[in-house]
Every structure is written in structure tokens, then in C-alpha cells.
Length: 322
Image 1 (cartoon, helix red, strand yellow):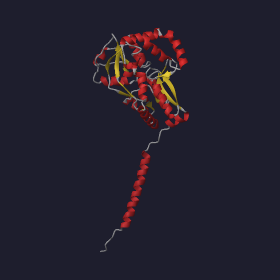
Image 2: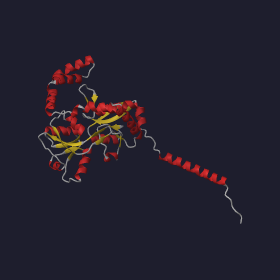
Image 3: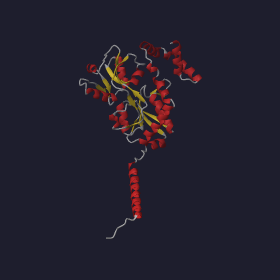
Image 4: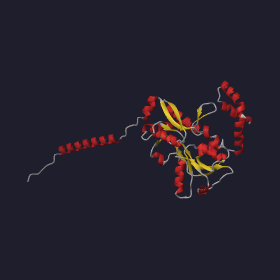
């Protein structure tokens, strides 16, 4: 019987070929798994504008007394657009429903409107990084309904904004509180409902803690009854698959936060809102309405002469002499 011998060189050749084929397969698989970068960021840079969908509110975007746009979302979106080397273009919508419909139709590149990141919204949109946290709260009127628990809300005229995170929260709570009920408003925003609560036309509503804090400066009779949630994440809303835009925002916000600029924006718009005195605020609001208009032309003239914001001079005058 003739002995067969295995040639070691043949084994080495077979192993080399097998290794080559495995390497090629891994390359093809990795190429197939890498998602193509979305073209949205490229289009934004090519057109030179970042189209920002937002709404008119003290916590988002508004025109100040000096006829210039202001607001936390305005400040942040403007800073981000600058980092891209483009100009921001703000498109105002009336409600959360309108904002999401506009985004779904491709009318904007992002929504900057204090939107809470919810599982329902994540099914239809992507989100940028978290830049702020808020708590959903039940707010009523001083001297009006005063619920102290979820069950107490069943006997109150409670109305919330349609398609808001508040509706999702109430639906989740209703599982364990079947008597809980509410109505929705599809035409007005949270600020309008707060005004209705303040005027006594509505029992209570639900709003984010930052919205309540700022609006109590205008409607001092508003009272927080109870919290409905733990701190919730606010983030910009993006189209599905906007990976490059999402990564760009993540990188920008990390640097913006590290530089202290994010903290400065939040303090600028919310710092004084945390210091609330009911009597002092009522006096302040009354003087804005009745006293300030008489002196506004003088503040504007002096501010122009010294290159200062008119409201800075007015605030200093009020602080010193009321």
C-alpha cells in the first residue's frame, strides 16, 4: 500500500485563498451595511439658509419691544446656523400640529419649538441632541380649582393642546386613573390656554415648567397644582434619516455647552423667571402697562444715543426707583 503525503505548500495556498475570500466577503458586507449620508446638510449649505420651523411664544421665538426677534429657540438656532456658515430663516406656525405637518411635507429643515422627545414622535421624526429638560405640570388659577392628585383632575375642566406631549402623558395616566378626562384644542397654543386659565375661562391646563415660569411674569395669578411627569428632554425635530444633520448638531451643541454659551442663553431667558413674587410681579405688570408707555420714547432716544438696548435702560430705571 502506497503512503499518501500531504504537501504543506498546498495547505498554505489553500489557507491563503480562503483568507482572501473571507476578507473580500467582509469588505462587501461592510460596504453594504454603511448607510449613505443624507443630502439634507449638503442642501442647507448649498442654499445658504437653514429653514427653522417654530412658533411665536416667549420660550421659542418672538419679536421684542425693539422690533427684533428674540427667544431661546431663536438664539440657539441662530448660533447653530452660524456654525454651518449659513443664515437662519424662521417660519412661524400657529400650533404643534401645524409644525409637525409642515415638517412632514418638507417645508423646513428642523423644528425648534420646545418639543419634548416622545416615542410617538420618534416613529415619524428624528431628533437632535437634548439641550434642556422640563417637567409637565398642571397649572390653575389662584382662587380657582386646586387639584392635589391625578384623581382630582377628573372633576376639573381640563384642556390641553392637541398633538402635544401632554396628551400622550394624560393617555398614559388614564390607564391607572380611568376617570381622568380632558379636551383638546387644535387651534391655540399653550400660551393661549394659560391666558384662558388666568382669566377664569378655563379651569386648568397642562404646560411645561419653562413655559409656566415665563408666563407667570405676565399672568401672576397662575399657580402650579402638581407635576405630571419627571423631567422630559427637549430637542430639535428633524426629518427621518437626517443623519449628517443630527451628527452636526451633536458636535456643535457639545462645543456650545462646553464654552458656557448654552448656560448664558438659558440664564438670559429663564434666570429671573425662577425668582417669582406674586405681589411684586402684579405691580410690575401693572406699571409696564400704565407707566412704561409714557417714558418709552425717552428710553428709545437715550438708548440710541449710547448704543444700548432700550429695555436695559428701562429695567435699570425700574430697579432703582420703580
